[in-house]
Structures are given as structure tokens and as C-alpha cells.
Image (cartoon, rainbow, N blue to C red; front, side, top):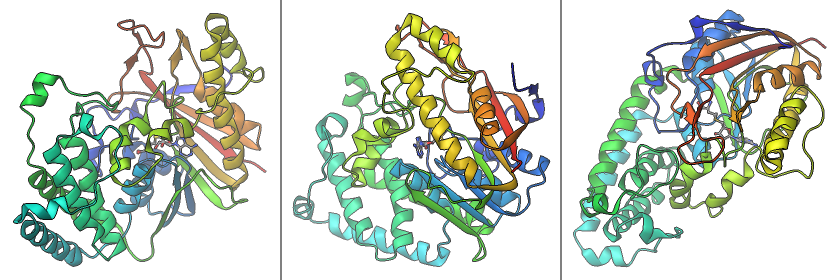
Length: 411
Ligand SMILES: C[S@@+](CC[C@H](N)C(=O)[O-])C[C@H]1O[C@@H](n2cnc3c(N)ncnc32)[C@H](O)[C@@H]1O
């Protein structure tokens, strides 16, 4: 191994969940434990400066940064649902206005539902295969909720109300709720599935307000600037002091399908390319040739002897990750630190050393590798087993550890 890895149980956080620091406002796949970020920022004595997360997802690196006293943070993601969650968590909204908006919303919806023909007059949502995923009754009630959310004039409050809406979409759909991929429940379960949509929504809204009021709002102030953008990372020369991020472990289609997880929500939120998102994420576009350079090349070549299509898919991911690291690296100031939290996935029984790849790429762009910590993966909400051969039932252990790769910019 070229870049030394140290097993560090301090980072295992056995038995701890995300919720023990910042209860999430919305489920999201493969979230990073904010505790990891807090511990490593403290260890590196990062207490100020501008933080970047180029793959911010639901925003756990901002939670870590806030705990460590950082006041300026920038995040990027191309999944609209991720950007929505991050923005809502870290935007100041008046608690009084939220409470009043909730009251008004409840009254307006109740009043509206008194006349059945009101529902018929509403514009129908554009959702692919809508009847496959939702009963007519659920469609009607979700349409009413969305109609009244759209009427809220305050942009931040409207956005806040979309969080429980998105959760309600998932919970009241025929998807199997405990899975990140989109699978429909068994037909016998569908027969008994009759959620009270309005009730589900109002409960989720109350829950979201409770969590925001108790865990996010107290940490926010006018002096804190957390700027989340819906785009791929835009480089900014020597602008950031610290990068803290957990990038995807592989392309979305064969690892964690962020797009698929978010499809129904994104469609209800009006995103017309919701079904294309997985193809837009890192590693989504296959190159013509496999990677021939760097320490990852040998591993890819081994996969290539078994399955050339998979070797191209894997190359696509590392091409994108490498390009992104170059853009990130030039955006960091001298003396700045980069912290990447990743897993080393297995494809065709070949375990790919993504931690080594990241350390190597940073060293090629003016950084020095400081340390890589290995942590046991206990609570990340993603499968530790998968089917890398894509044969049903054939699974091997993958990613039982995660790696925290730390480098420093020298020039
Ligand atoms: C491991 S998740 C980040 C999780 C985050 N740390 C959290 O706690 O929620 C990786 C994120 O990268 C995003 N992503 C993938 N490819 C991207 C790209 N090219 N540009 C920006 N974001 C991307 C995905 O949408 C996903 O939200």
C-alpha cells in the first residue's frame, strides 16, 4: 500500500447514529456521520476559514463545521432533493412564522376538502407511471397538499414545507419504505395499504418543525453563511481552507442510487428529468477506454480480464473523481486540508482502493498525504453486502471499513 492507513477505533462511533448529534429532517442514502467530521476537524485544529463540500448530499459536513465554529461553508450537489434538504436544514426561518404557516395551512386544507369537487379542479401532477406507485386517493391528497404549499409566499417557509411533503410522498406510495431503491410492495400488502395522507403530512410537518427548532435553529445566526448550490462543483482559485466531503463510492447505477431513491420526490417537486439523475451523477457516462495510469490501473485491468463493460463503468467513476479532485485541489489555499471519507467497493471480487486513489490524486496536484484513518463501518445506512457479480444471491462482503483520507496543500 503506497499511502499508509492507520486503523483508528476512535472514528468507529459504535452504536451511534446520525440522530445523536443532528437528527436528520429527511432520509437520505449513505449519509456521513457528522461525528466523524467533528472529530477530524478538531484533530486538525480547524476552527475557522471557509469549508467546501463538493458532494454535500443532505449536509452532514455543514453540521460538523457548525459544531466546530465554522461560519462560512459552501456545498454542491446535482440531486435536487439533496439540495432541498441541505438548504432547509441550514437556512434561518422564523419559528413564529413557521407555526403560523402551519396553522393556516391546516385550516385551508380542511376547508378545501369539505367540497369534493375542489379536488377535481386541481391540475394533475406529471409523474411517470403514477398509478403504479400511488392509489388515486393518495394522488388526490398529495395534489391538494402540494397546491397549498405552492401558495405559501415566503420562499424559505415554502421550501421547509416541501421536506415533510417529500417524506409523505415516499411513505404513502407503494414503494417498500425500508429500501433505497424503488421497489413496489407485494400486491397483498397493497390491498391493505390505505394511508391517511393529510394526517401523515401534518405529523411529519410537526416533527420537522420540532427537529429544526431544537437542533438546527439554535446553531444558526446571521453571521453564518451556508451556501448550497444545485450544480457540479465550480472551482474558485485558492478560495477554500478546508474540504470535508463523502463522495459517492462508485457510479450511482451500481452502488447507491441517489437518483432512484429521490425519483418520486423529485417528480412531485416538479423536476422533469428526475429519472435521468443517476446517469448525471459521478461515473454516469462511460468512456471509450479503461484507465491505464496510476495505481488504480492494475485493479481495473484485473476487472477488464473478467468483464470489459464493468471495467469501463469503473473507469468512468475514477475519471470523474480524478477530474473533480483536480478542480477541488486548485480551489484550496496553501496550508489548507482536504478530508475525504470513502469506502473501497468491490467489483468482480476486486476491491478497489479508492482511498489510495484519492491520496495519489491529491499528491499529484500539490498536496502532501498526511494520514488515512480506517474506521469500522457500523452505522452507515447502506448495505455492507452487495452482489458485485450481479448474480442474484451471490454476495460478498464489501466496505466493512471506511477511510478518512487527509491531505494538506503545500504550494
Ligand atoms: C455519499 S453522498 C453524500 C452524503 C452527505 N455527506 C450526507 O451526509 O448526506 C454523495 C452525494 O454526491 C452527489 N453527487 C454525485 N455525483 C455528483 C456530481 N458530479 N456533482 C455533485 N454531486 C454529486 C450525490 O447526489 C450524493 O448526494
